[in-house]
Length: 259
Length: 244
Image (cartoon, rainbow over the protein chains, first blue to last red):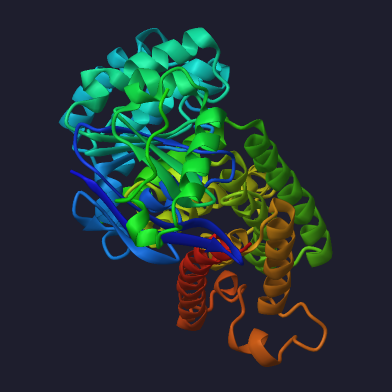
């Protein structure tokens, strides 16, 4: 149930969106992918979700290869894309049922899971409500319900708190740390929100220009510093070290900045 | 067989039938069929033997408009709303997606043709005395147009994959379908009784001529266009991810 990424790269023309990323995430870990805009967080998640083909490198999700077993990866991964695109004209349960059928879930299991995720995401009063009339927070909840509907081994969430108010953000944070979402699974989420990192993450990976800049296994050591401050500290620490080849960067990540 | 195409078909049709624009197109196709029927009957000037040909000509001209409308947004709309990303990160293959989209568009085109037959049914009901004609020729002719529409719809799916804009996909599909309809009915100057229209005439069935060549042509064309759409979709997904 792990994610293993080795020298994964993605180039768009001459630009390297992800450049030799290497890391491993194990079950039970909630890994926050942080980094400035353009660092490669979304591209990395899109590759792991098999939406984008990598340019080079290898990656396996629960042992399935991204290249040669992409459909197997899709079956065991739950993906929340940036902006949570949904079908606005469909009702909440209608949409989730469609997604479950698309994932070839057997009817009794789909019925049971629909009941469970609708209750878990607090969508029961909105079962027949068209998605277009939901608030941003409710839409995000529908998208999370979709991502966990088929009980995936691995969850890939791209900016789960984007454009949410503090109350809605708190609800989503609670969902992410609940056993329903995170128990026994790998949760890899990209975010710009330091409070989400502190509340949810058990590990932080910082990307910068597509490279792994830092890999912090104890986020409590980050202290109260904001993310841009941490990025600067990590960059300075990386510059102080001799620039290692990308393969060594993950194992010899710069020291975590002291709070 | 995978049930994914049918899941997609059901969802697409359900959404399309909720849209006002769909019902507007149904009404427009029925109205256009009525106008073409009146024009055809006037042109036929009492040649009752040509009634099935008039009916099928009217359907063959109206069908491309329905095909263009129901196929042009198949991918562009999903691309714009971002749902293409959720679709292609579900365990579905490109072929299943193309087939599902084709089935949904084709179902709506057939429904349009059924509604486009209403003016003809009304004419038969109101005409006094009832015009003599062979119902079997009408049925065969309508089936030939439905089969041609399958090939046109497959082309529309291909255009929808190829074009980034809905309008470009719709215009390309409409131009292709109308020109091929004119070509297959021998309506182009220089093509009447010559070339392809002599080999395959879409209206032969309405004249009572049972010919397997149009059937083979339309089925082959539909399969070819769908195959091209699947391959192009794979290529596009790859190209879009490597473009700077």
